Image (cartoon, rainbow, N blue to C red; front, side, top):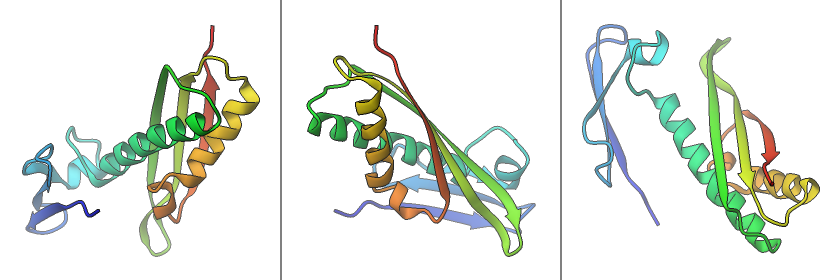
Length: 142
């Protein structure tokens, strides 16, 4: 199964501008530029899109792994923090941190931690990265 996205860029790095589009139309010529990527200007950027992809993929992977262990989560909430920094060879993403909180009836913390670790390792988006992926996993059961 293939998925497609495209980007268009005009101009130099700092004064240029681009757009990004996705096959589904969720992103339709969405603008991005240097300020949005490196200077905290409001708008999207590649790292934000990577974070969204990782958080959503991980959440689904965790649901799958929990299901294989006999649990059905009521809710899985994941935030992904992608760190972009300048290294010796230019800019790089050395770390991604997943912060997940889930409500999983019947699961104890040991089973949840095992499932979360398995999801982190097995998530297709996790497998893409040459970054250190860390995680905090919190089980919220009443």
